[in-house]
Length: 416
Image (cartoon, rainbow, N blue to C red; front, side, top):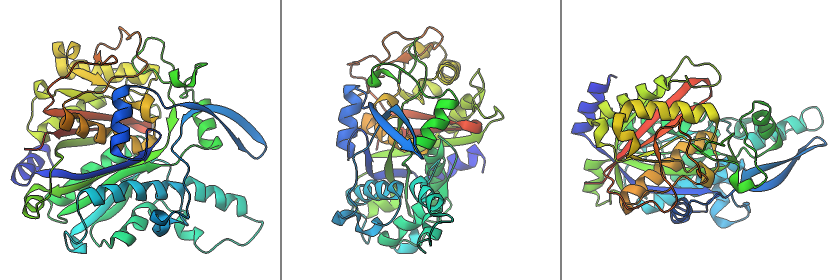
């Protein structure tokens, strides 16, 4: 569908967020995430990993360990850690939206974004191969689709569903696709989010060999978005979910709208494995498309939650795109990256950052960019310092970039 068609459909049938939940390094719920984001303090710590007699120490943002015997984890107790974290976050969103029996099962769907999927179960399969009999459940539990499928079972859903993989933009693509199911009349509501459990030796070694991981003697200072001394990411893990509903049907059942999903766009750019052109042209394209769908002008954006990974090229390219979008306003429009707080949770990151944007709209506050002590002149944006002043926020944009040129932008607006 073209942007104009989506804009027309969205004008006729606005989409609102009525529930949200998260579980990650910054805490086990939205309140904890927001408090950590507002404080602007990294959650990274040194942690030792090993695999097949190899060992290494990495700075990571770890979520709390899970005890599969906990009653609340019963529906997913035998599944991968990424599924268990997804269940915790999605259930929070479900409860906040008061979703039980809100719609017929066929009118509610689920879409989940993940870059690496159930890594733990895949590792378990490889360790068992050729040595002993596989548990029958591993056949289904190894699939990417197990994430959405496992959540649909306890929620008793029969609507549209898919697990989306678009590298670090996965959850943003999932949010856009979920919204389109509502606009097309295929669902009245969608559970949508992202999840990753990527803290293992293999993934960390891959990222280290590619030069993506940052380094600093203080683990909390490793990720320094838009800082002149930045040199890479801190890997994180976790899950965040939203409940999207047609504003009309949400109002009819008396649900409270937390925010409105005003626009979205995604593309696959020809920028190769690195994922971004130096001039940020692909990101500029999706930001402009998201604005067209939302029926907004660039000057109406009050806050940008930047992808801001802390890598040299990525941050500079994103800042270049934002500068082209905002023009002279780039020096004043608040931008911040919350990745030092959550860690870079790969495909789940856009869902965490969607929650941050929604909370910024609800609370009329903007979180800072942690560790940006000396902003890089080559990144000509207003990266927020610690303790930024209160700023009116009506429309917030969230950017996502990933390997292989996956770009996405989401726009959230204050609930009317």
